[in-house]
Image 1 (cartoon, rainbow, N blue to C red):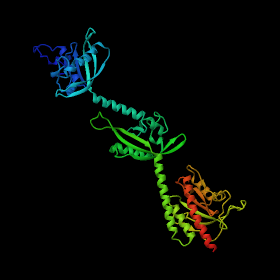
Image 2 (image 1 turned 180 degrees about the vertical axis):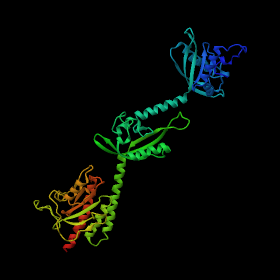
Image 3 (image 1 turned 135 degrees about the vertical axis):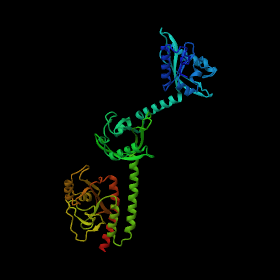
Image 4 (image 1 turned 180 degrees about the horizontal axis):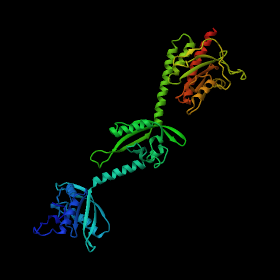
Length: 468
């Protein structure tokens, strides 16, 4: 049975008579209506159903043979109590310009109810006067699902408090929301189509590897934390982004065709740095506790001070030095014009890893100039930080900078903490970091001062023992 009433008319023409053009037009119209994805029906000026396509049959269960020719929807597709109102809404399109949109419940053939949204408009005859109404309808829940999907997409791209980037199969941003653009330090349009390497100084390889894996294998089971360095006009910013990835495939293709990857991320830098700082504090406190236990087993206080230095050095610096003031100590009444002279007590090997080695008893002062960080540390009675540079520095310049301070050739950053005990300055403990390590920060200085207090107490005790 076709989708129109005209297709149900018996062919009364003789075998030798040509087929009428009207019949060809009706068959073509029925075929077109049946091939459409939308449910379609039509009514003449009296409200009689004239067309009914296959999608309408799928939704409501009534075939075209059962629907075409009926007077309105009363008693079969609509409850009788609602039939008058529904018919009035549909036929009102003949008297109104444009399309009319309505929502109401229709009855299925098996007695169920379906809430539909209809769009109806007038059909005009050759004289331009309304001759009927056509009506397209769909299940409301499908329309609502579509609207929700569109609303979700717009909300993610406009109002979301996390970054959303749609990356194409070439791993280049195709859509970027406002939050992601701010995180990347650029505009929403200027980032499109650019390689990720143009936006990120570090972390590009890890991020592109994750995107490639998602394209090949699908959505990962859990978010990943990716550390990156973002290029900005003020320089590079180190950030940690908790990232989730979703593979995007075309819903219109029979086989899944990858369109790219949906990348959603949140900046968790502060919380991760807090976790790292807390873990670092726990590690350092544990090292000091272990150092105290190991030092308690040493008979010589000087040896205990060196043991303390080795435990403090782990994970903190590459090299360490202990320099003591010539004569043992300096108090607050010492002559400030008198130059500070320091003698090396212990040092870590500069060529290879290993425990600190006592410098012996030669008593020869270290040739530090007046501007040396160790000398400044003694004069100020506080910690002093020094660095060859915060950015990449040529190796030759680093060696020259370290040699001028009589530190190992690979030294880039130095931190000197004063050794004080019982109101007297005993000397300096120096921690050194090589290339590839970050500069010492304020929290590092606090840790070095804590270590210096412990070492100073042991050196003071060693001096008292030696005097006896």
